[in-house]
Length: 356
Image 1 (spheres, rainbow, N blue to C red):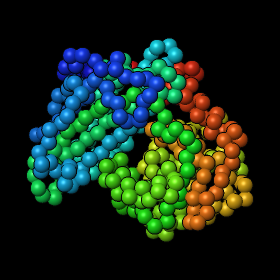
Image 2 (image 1 turned 90 degrees about the horizontal axis):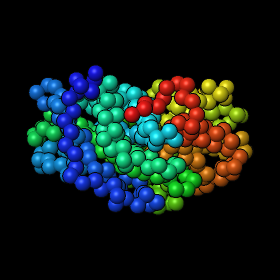
Image 3 (image 1 turned 180 degrees about the vertical axis):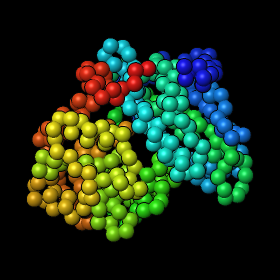
């Protein structure tokens, strides 16, 4: 078995902190479970993975990831099912995207089956931290960074792969307000927009903060060349509904992160016979539809955000109100289905949920 091949060393914490958690108050990403997984890459190969008590990591001041940005991550969730079992939603897609990020950032690839098994085993160890309430889950953060103690612009020869987890509630506690960004860019053709690398998020913080100061939760990024076409939002992919058709920007461009949740949304829609279009989506098209009432729905789709309804779109000097939430029957139905699927309340015909 793969688990035996990996030979994961496990050192348990002397005492669990899970009893200290206020489960009715779970701020996103601030409460961490008892352990972390660590695996080092050196001498051209991955070393024995280890699960050990959660704690700080000591690094050299010249650690290359700090200076040259070789750092990538993923995000996924584990849920407690109604039958008491634990499931992880589509981890193989995160494994594939992580491998693609490794390639683009010149980092050693973790084989997809190994990645999934490391995540599965770690979640098994941290199972006591999975909330039992509806709309709550265990957020899983695998990441990798370069560790060479060297000042020089070249790929590192050593790396550290780690996983930690956080019990979480909703990322957004209210419907989302977004602003279409026409000056700053998230990514350009030929860049690293498709990789889930830390630098993409670092570069987005300043324009995002400017948007927040104007009363918006997030930006909607547009193409860097002309700012005429919509790409994605800050924490999620974006989906629109017009003429009873779900429409989302095509992921053929290397400027858009390929989203697991968005792919699930579109696959579910197709399974239900709802028309789906993945194509270029112009800013003009969306603004016109919002003004004339033909934009039926707009929402974000992401691991952290899940399905996040967008209620206002800022564009230049206007703020456009979108249809009332109660009219958005398709996105509500998809969200409820995804929630029920992860909770084991409905059948899983496409085998999306890995049982731990």
